[in-house]
Length: 345
Image 1 (cartoon, one colour):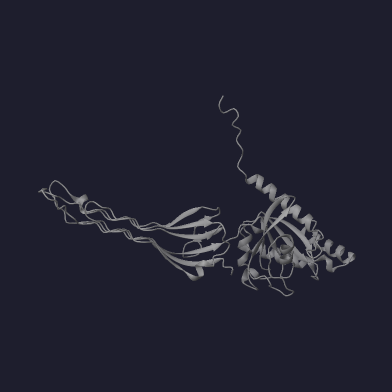
Image 2: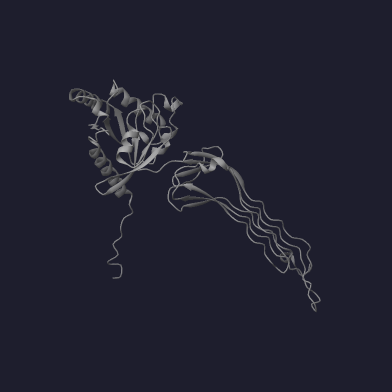
């Protein structure tokens, strides 16, 4: 399935149905009076986060959504039926913006979460509402109110526990494929990954979700290469795994380039917990490993992990450390458990 993380759509809620002008016509009833029913309410437009979706590709083929108009009122005090709602089904993690693509309307982060984007118009009153002591036979009714219409942007930010960042060909996709069941495209040339990939890793009987995004190069925040657009997919992660390829001549400079792009992007990425790993170490001998490990440690200010997805060396240690950080974050976010043993006393 093709990946699409941004879409522009037009929505319109249903107009309200018009009220009816009608009078009773019954045998043996001399003065029937008005009996025009009210119009039905127009349908709403809703957005709902559903399970099983991880792309907005459906909105590439349909960009206009209109709810149904309410049915007009009828005689015998019959109210028109309400218009059918329209529901935009989106993946969990979808943000909805105004037409300016900056003003946030809602952020759908949980399965089943709903938000009304456009309210349907109310139905008009029938002529029975306008009967007074001085006007026993009103011949007027209200039209239904028009629905709302607007253009909105849907923007998907994948929800994952850990995010992989690094230069192109740093081994991110290979790492993802080795620790999850995901099957990203892997090749020995830059920008093999053109869109984010998700996978579920398992370690010590616990699971967490990893997001792999296309590689960053210097100037990505200015649009160089693929740019930094896909960094939005790691905004929600609890920890970043920064992979630096052992094939790089200057691993310190490679580390600084990616850190600079994270800081230029902002949105709190530069403040996230970061684990640094020297990847593809199977290509180096022991002396080269030690030299590049020391260089990377000085640049990052932390002790990097040594990882080879091809030989699985160091992979389990990285996964355990990721799970430790994620577990601590989950405990902090979990609501406190109330002790109700003494509530009945």
